[in-house]
Image (cartoon, rainbow, N blue to C red; front, top):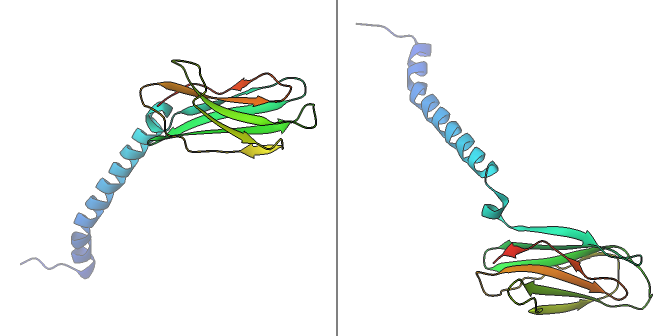
Amino acid sequence: MTTRTRSTRNAMRSKPRRIAVAAASSLILTAGAAIAGATPAAAVDGGCYRGGNNGWNILACISTAGQYMFPDFYVDAKGSPALCTISMYVQPQTTFVERWVKNYPCTLGHHGPQGVNLPVGVKYRTVVRATGSEPVFSKWVWR
């Protein structure tokens, strides 16, 4: 008959637990690597472009999540005239006709995002037009 000390018995009891913890840790690391290696399009698609002229500095953005697109924009510098309007559109690549529009006050800072649900299978982008500036476009995203 083999006699085991208390520390030997505890070590034997904890061995299955250590194996389970090691397996779970390995699974978590593998899942984390898979998520980290995912392409942006597989997770959430979107992007921004900066533009503007005549004193305007605008960053137009769009992103997607689930069934919605989220257009938004940032005004970092305002041009003239002092009295102005800023309009944000969502434009499909198929027709280039604005499908959704919202007007915003002519102020510095972040405007939006606004959840928009449009037909799938089409690329869309955000278009921002400020009085006195050329339009600013975001990147195209699939919906």
